[in-house]
Length: 437
Image (cartoon, rainbow, N blue to C red; front, side, top):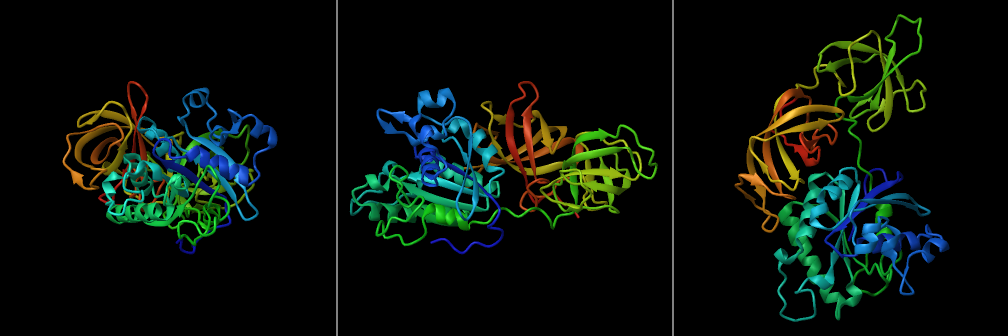
C-alpha cells in the first residue's frame, strides 16, 4: 500500500507510463483521459475500431503508430481532476526506442511501470507455480532500472490485464512478490503496486471493490498524492546561459548592457550576488535579475531568469554563471551511462558531450563494467551494446563544473552525441567519484 506522500503535492505532476511492449500503456492513458472527462465526444468518435473504442489511439498520434499498433515516440497529454493537474508522457515499450523513454523519464516526477499479467508463465492459478524474478520481462526490469537511475522520485507498478486471469488474486499476489524481490535486489524504492484493468477501468480512476484482495487507493487517487521532485535549492548557484540579449541603448554605465537568459539550474540568484563565469573564470556582481515576465525579482532553481552583471564580460551561449569557489571544474569524470546508439560503445571513441548548453569533446577513456539486467550484478565489459547500462570514465577536452547526479539532476547529467551522425548516443549520470566543494 502507498505511503503518505511528503513534499509538494499541489503542483502539477509529471509522470510517465513505461514497461514492455503491449502491456497497455497507451490504453491506460486513454482510460485516464476518458474517466477524468478530458476527452470530448467527437474525439471518442474518431478513435473507433470495428465499432469499439480503441483507447490507445488517444495517445498514438503518428500514422506509423496507428498502422502498427505500437508507440514509437513519447506522446504528452494533459488532464486534471478536482485535486490536481497532470502531464503524462506515454513512453514506447520497444527496446529500440529506449532512448525516447529515457528522454521522458529524465524530467518526470513519477513513473507508472506497467506489468502485463498474461505474459508471466507463473502468474496463473497453478498451485505449484514457482515465482521466478528473472522471468519478469526485460523491458520491465530495464525501464525500472532507468527510472531509478534518473532519480524518478516515485515508481509505481501497475499490474494490468488481471481481468483476463482465471484467478486474479493469486496472479496479483505472485507478481507482487516477484516485483518486490526485484526492487529489493535493485535497491529501488517502490511507492505502490496496484492491480488494474486499463481496458475495463478497474482500479484506474476509481476503486474496484473486493478485487485481488487489494484495499489500497485507485491508481489515480495514488497519483494525486505523489510529490513532485524538489528543485536543487540546497545546491550552490549554477546558471547555464542559453541566450544573450543586448539592450538597444543604455546610458546607464553602472551595469553591463547585456542580459543573459536561461533557467536557474540550482540555488537562487538575486542582485548583489557574486558570480564566476565558466570557462573564463572572470567574476562580477549581479546588478539586476529579471523573472520570466521581465520583472525585477529573485529567481530560484527551475525557473527562467535574465541576469545583468555590473560590468561587461565576455559571456556567450553555453557559458555557465556559478557561485564563486563552490565548484572545481574537472576534466575527467566517472559516470553511469545508458547507451542508446545502435553502434556499440568502445573505449577510445570521441563524442560531443552536452551539459546545459555547453558542448565539449569527450573521449571514452575506459569502460568499467555493465549491469546485467537479469541478475542485476555488475560484470566486466569491453563494450556497451544498444540499451545497455554501464559505468565508464570520460576524459573531457575542456573542464566542466559537475556534481554527482544523486545531488543535482542539472549539474550531474550530460548527453553524448555522435560527432559524425549527430545522433544522441547516451545519457550520462555523473557518479560521486567526482569531488567538488
